Amino acid sequence: MSPRPWHADAWARLQARRERDALPHALLLAGPFGLGKREFMAAFVKGLLCQRPSDGHACGTCRSCQFVAAGTHPDLIALSFGQRKDGVTRSEIVVDQIRELSQRLAMASQFGGWQVVSIDPADAMNAAAANALLKTLEEPTPATLLMLVADEPARLPATIRSRCQRIDFLVPSREASLAWLRAESVTDPVAALDAAGGNPGLARTWAADGALKQRGEVRHDLKALAAGRGDPLEVVKRWQASDAPRYLWFAAQAVTDELRARAAGGDAPLESRLDDESLDAWYMRANRARDALRGPLRADLVLLELIAAWR
Image (cartoon, rainbow, N blue to C red; front, side, top):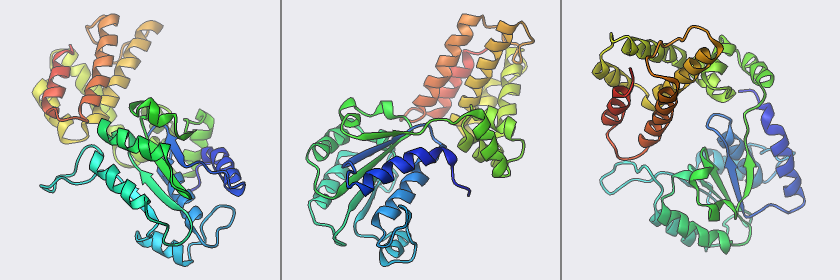
């Protein structure tokens, strides 16, 4: 994997703070999924814990690096979705996990250096967990760095966001994105980038896993349903069986293209019978449905309600 050029400025600023011994006690890495926040965090953490770093990068051979590579470094704590008592993986980070973290941080570093905590996805903490973390953020222990990763930072309470130094990962320019995709040998980078809404990381992933085909299927389905030919139940079944959130992304994207075509006086790709106001409302509804799939609601019912509103 080639380096992601849009990380360079953030990396340089963070390393400059490290050299001045001015790292904050909490960092929030924020931005859309696919821009490499987690790779950035992993590289920084490895360098921070490394016993012989070079320009902030880990040597990869020291004792600390070996422990990190094995996932057994005693001063590196990774907090994510835990499991319920019945063995099912949770869909949120809960307060007990944060309490256990606080107890762990009360102990001294075993290597005598930094203790580093990653919370990913931080925007999946429930309210009780976020409130518990707030106390840790307000009373940080020495030489402790909390790194929060959030694809949707607005989901985090403002009290959490305000106590973290924030690094925003922004979608790079189209020219920079296409240059990177070509360097990554992505087939048809223009189509992949358009499908991913300009996000080069998503574009690379989607170009490799059949997402462009799914994008075409969504448009075909919506056009058929608008013409009265499609079977809503069959559409729901197929969307649910694959990657429902991604299908909803493509559905909302298709509606945007429909509205743009109408505004330009061109041929509307979906030939929907909905007026512009109703199309805009359906677009919002599709995004709400994608959000609803995060929760406990049945995916088939969420999708069926959305499809029923399309014609």
